[in-house]
Image (cartoon, rainbow, N blue to C red; front, side, top):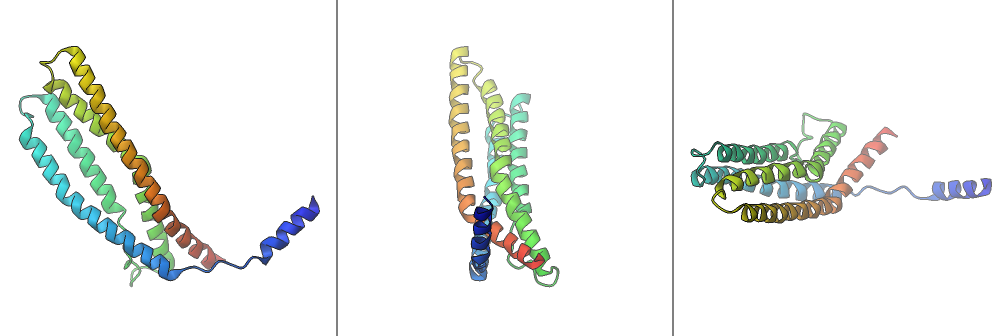
Length: 195
């Protein structure tokens, strides 16, 4: 057993250290920044338009329940927008304000938060969206029979919930391929600096 440990130790020590691909890191950060910029611009346009359209088109003044559901949707959309703004990565943060170590730590933190938004917080957004839609449809579909309303609620919940779950899974897989390697590379650079 001791020989196996010594063989593994020699094998481990014989490995060459992995060099960091600085060009790849900068390229990855630029791609991430460009994607985030496009996403933020579309969110900054879509969020107020959607909220405005919903308040314009829905009879929210006639029903307190519809008004509450619209406020829930607005809150959820603004909440996701604020989180996206907080996780914005920038390749130029290291100028005069940060040391390289502070820059790396900041970028790692932002990338982790971006990943966490997709993996954790989007489920909360989905729940709020489904809650608001079901409240709204419960009131709007009041003239229908109970069986029809239940069927519509179930169908709506399954379709929207399923779609959102699929989108979240897709986004997390994408981040596993794009963000995790960047995070690991920057963490490796920090560890190397400490050593």
